[in-house]
Image (cartoon, rainbow, N blue to C red; front, side, top):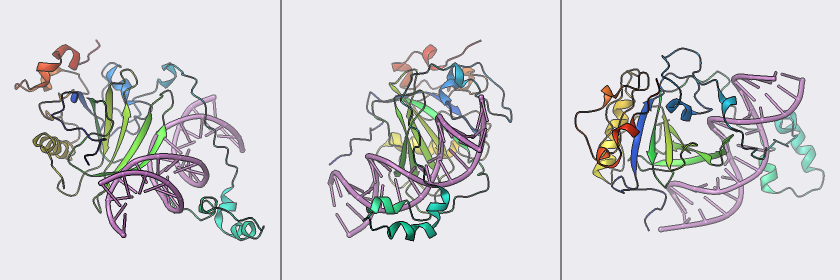
Length: 252
DNA sequence: CGACTTTGACCAGCGC
DNA sequence: GCGCTGGTCAAAGTCG
């Protein structure tokens, strides 16, 4: 049975409208969405997005972490005490009595990141790689959850996040982090092969270069200047679908 | 049965 | 210090 959560790039409902690089950004997380709205900002060391408070608050129900389990009780010695209380704990409860894996204490160095927006009804788009979903989180100020995926290839640490563009929920924002250490295992369509090639190219070490054209379905957005100069001379299918003016969002 | 998704909790970072 | 939030873990569930 064909998977429902993938869409082939030939699908007319699928076409990317923009592309931007987020390399070297320490944290874009409140919203990469804002990147398309704020005036161009030259790369600086500090986080670029600092205006989250300007977003509308949707009064989403807070999900306070009501767990009062202390780290000590998780540690191990108290486990036995709990189990001796005579209660038959479920496996689920026992799970959280186990010591968790040690998480890296060192501040993780950010992998190169880049993101692009795609108009699609499905969240997880085929890009030629195989991904395993390892988490989903509700996003503040957004009714749509953010999904986290890892590349299933062994020794490949590439991750991607998928979320809906808040200002236009018909768009999916896909953020890649890291570089694949292997060739794509599955290329079911020519377009996915092209996409893969471009993703590999974009994840090359030279992070600050203007992105290449990804394929005929997407158009690069020069993140720093928002100049259309990055547009290719070859006007692909996208230009048959979406006016150029709607592709390059620029605010002067 | 393996691959993948779901889901709730843990943890770290950050702002107040 | 506390609470919020994003990111991750890992057992259980689902699917082919």
